[in-house]
Figure (cartoon, protein in one colour):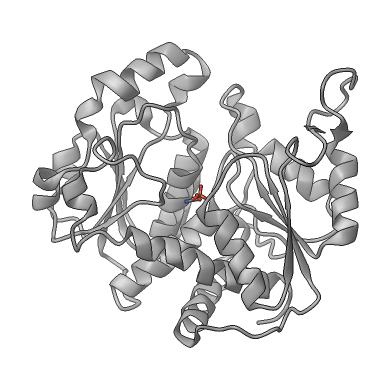
Length: 343
Ligand code: CP
């Protein structure tokens, strides 16, 4: 469970890093981007990247960041070229899973200098997902720093890249700008990590944040409470609106994202009906963008065209999703340098 106590030895949850650390890393990322920084300051170091789930941006941006810093990478895809990992504790391992995570992570730690982990929400046990038990176990077993490359609960590297992109849009003065996170339909029940982290970074940049989603799609109370505590601490606003057009009015940023509602844990069929049918008209289109303050359109990618957002919006000059994706590289380069004490 994340707290607001700073823990800068890993990068697991946004709240593990205090405001000055977050802002310092964002400043460094902007500087690295401006310099097109490529120096072998981390020569000889190795980044071990464990992917339990697929990726395009995360994998390539981390590999590229490592190369730019003179480091190497080792990609581990459990069950694909390495043994399958048992992640549960205390089980009799007489099934298909060959190696326990406990040994695997300790061994990997002997070879590499940072471990990155991608392990999406299982969406079976809400407490397991919200407490981020798997990545927390990996932190416990690891003897090197661990970076969250999207866990059950958060995607902090995405949030940092989004923060950098927002800073760029508003010349480092996003405070008071209206940021809207909009739920959108999707044929698949996607994890909630991105919305959880994006709400937090927007609040911590001092933005006036509105979450717009159907009533059944509000993220877990633990996340909303954490975001609310940051907002109280920083004197910013977080509102929830179930009317997408009202929420979009005068917005400076529209961030679209699909996610599965909490009902996925108790009644997946009902959640599917809501996500794909009842709320199918929540796609972001020109009409909705027209009521904004010429808002920038953001999405973490991958995006389903004409389901999440129309071609017209995604191909418009307001769309900055490719900048967001590029900024993964710069933000993560800064995170690696922070964890390797190279800043
Ligand atoms: N946004 C993001 O994490 O992209 P990938 O899933 O392709 O890594």
